[in-house]
Length: 149
Image 1 (cartoon, rainbow, N blue to C red):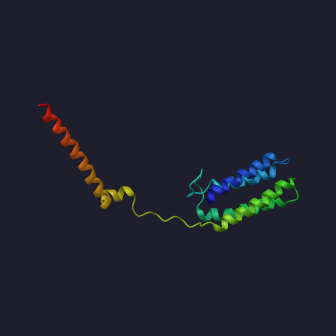
Image 2 (cartoon, one colour):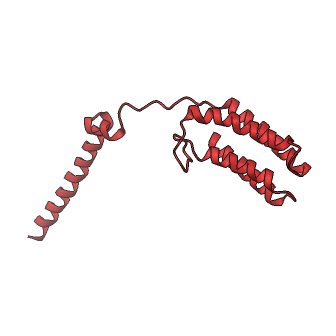
Image 3 (cartoon, rainbow, N blue to C red):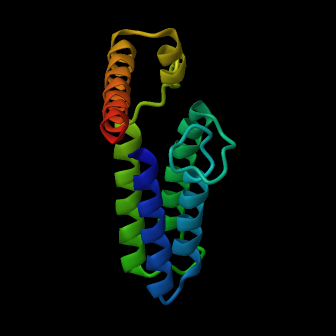
């Protein structure tokens, strides 16, 4: 969810920039957010698997600070509506960051294929069902052959 929200917020910032009379700053902020979202190594929606979760956690704070600085800086012209949107998005990103878990996913000990190869109750039931169906089909074929002769 964290990554999907980042994509959404980055898209909103880019769209805000496209509709703003001065598009540079909101568009730049949106590109920063999108670039941060698409480079997480373990993210489900990652386009470029480059950064670990721990690095992404730190970069999230940097991107939030950059969006805030871009929103309040006096040197480049930014529409007042775009400033408000940028501050709001920085607040939402901070909340999402605060509520996110950046713990690395634990490796699974065994995959389903390995478990199936080892066997187990469900595998055994599946094999028995398959044999039962196969035996029934073979019995029906033998019955049809006897009937013809």
